[in-house]
Image (cartoon, rainbow, N blue to C red; front, side, top):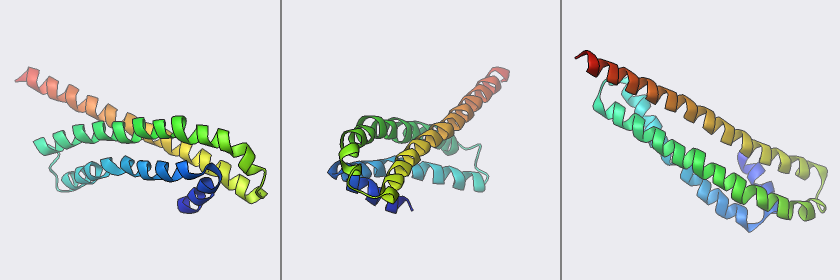
Length: 140
């Protein structure tokens, strides 16, 4: 479904959307860290140093690739292209294409909001871990 929406967006926004879709693939750089964290958790290695380092790297990479990069793509590239080319391109197409176009834009905004929600959870977990670690160190 996202692919079909992307085709409509590319048709209206133009060549710039192809570049943006390729740059958007960079947001997946955080996926190996998320997968490794799940594997470590499944194998009950949550007390290992690797789990801690992976959690820290996962949070940093997720923030940079998903929150910073995707927000930049959306606010500085995609939405301006939509505003600039949207009115002239939408005048020539049918209602279904227009609805799909706006739905695609809203979907990108929703995905960005979800990424910030997940980052918030990661950051809280990181803070909780570090506060717990510092409390253990003080006890010893």
